[in-house]
Image 1 (cartoon, rainbow, N blue to C red):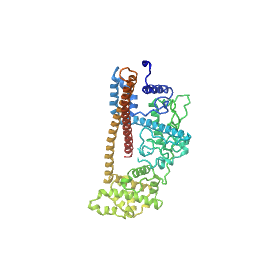
Image 2 (cartoon, one colour):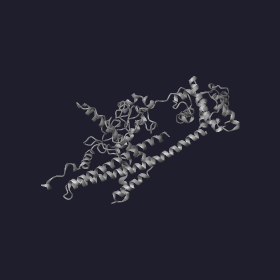
Image 3 (cartoon, rainbow, N blue to C red):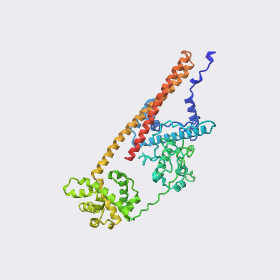
Image 4 (cartoon, rainbow, N blue to C red):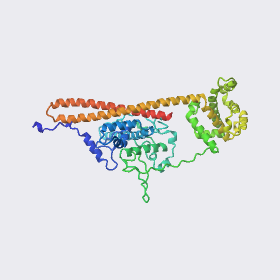
Amino acid sequence: HKRQRRAPQQFVFDEPDAKRRRQSAGRGRGGGRGEKDASGEPDKPQSALAYYTKAVREAVAAEAGEGAPSSQVAKLVSERWKGAPQEERRRYERVARADRERYEIEMQAIQERKAAMAAARPGRKSVSPAKPELSPRAVSRDVSMDASMEEPAANGAGDGDEGRAADKSSEAAAGSPAAEGGGGGGGGGGGSGKRLSFPISFPMEDAKLIEREADYRAYLVAASRSLPPPEPAPGVAPPPPSFVYPPTLHGPPPARLPPLPDLPQPQPLRLSVELPYAACTRLLMLWDLSARLGPALRLRLRSLPLAALANAVRCAGALDYSLAAELHCAMLKAVAQDYEGLDEWGAWVRAVQSPRLPLTWPALTAQLIDVSDDFSVYCERRDEVSAALAKGEYSDLTPCQRVEVLAWLADRALQSERLRDHLDRRAEFAAAKRRDRAALVEQEDKAAAALHSARFRLQELLGKMIGSASSRGRPRAAAAKEGKESEAEMRATIAEHEAAVAKYRRLKLDTDEILDNV
């Protein structure tokens, strides 16, 4: 009989219920978001707003009063999110970033496993792994967020010379993934030809490793996949400390997070010259100045190691003296701009701007010291230092006096017109980037809200299709055709919203990297 016939199989839609059952079954011990479903696909990442809503929804609902509609609660949560302090927003954004990183790493591992299985079948061609659903960046980014969030490395092979030179033995002693992961065990950056938005490449600097570890732990707690580490109790042995980041390197997350391993103790820095505490502080200030404002001072060395600066202060050889001369010449050129146009300083400015400056800089520095009252704040033996420089005998100064002369010149250079203009331009650029970031956050929130609404409408449509398939009113063939067309339009709209959310997230991350540089 016609009434006993079941609905066609293509209209049977049980994916939401099945997915809900799978998620509820995985929430026993360490389950929840991030677990792979029966098809092997990991859950898609959530936004920072979603994690914030999960954290404050109960409190907001209590403030709204009993019986308040969910739409009103959602509106209050959205308003609170827009007015939240920047530090609080950053915390949830970092959790969302860890979630997206988890998703892309797990998707990478799944695609590599599928490609390996396809290649192992006889008579089948090797299939290249597909890209993750979240659009990857055009180039592989370095894992660093500060030296990065900085221009990326050329090939994503590591975190720079300093990261490659990290003591691997100390990392192995601490149980670091840097020692275990080799060249990017979690589906990382360079060499594989597959580019993720969050490539991992080891060895990683300890500070960056702990930062990623903390973000991933915060995500596990926020997604209800793991409980926080246990509080120390008297008479109870704590569990052994271990890392849980990156996701694919250490297996599934534990039911309760273990304590964080202790980092190797920093080794004392040995310089080639003995200096008092005040002189060491000024030497570090000079090192930071040359590293951050080297392009503004037009230094040939874009990155000056601290040991090289200490050797320049020691001045034990020709190369050390050459570096000290370049630093003094750069400072004098910056200072000379403030004296241009003054008749009494015309000869001195022309001498600073002449090609003979590398030979005459000690005498020109002595002339500037003689007319400056603030030099006595840096050096007590002002006359002795001025007389030695006037004779061109830089080597007659003690290492402490050389540091004092350089620190004084650096302070004068920081007050110069060139440096002020440079810092003003950087400040204006940073302000513009902060405005751009705020606009990107607002656009991402709107796109995420539109995506959520589109997915909800799609579920409603599929439910209606199930009901119309068994109804006796309209012909089922016409209803099926109309439903399929509406479903295709809905899925296309969802794909557009997903692409928009991914685009705004990538742009926001790029803006964060630029702001960290500035």
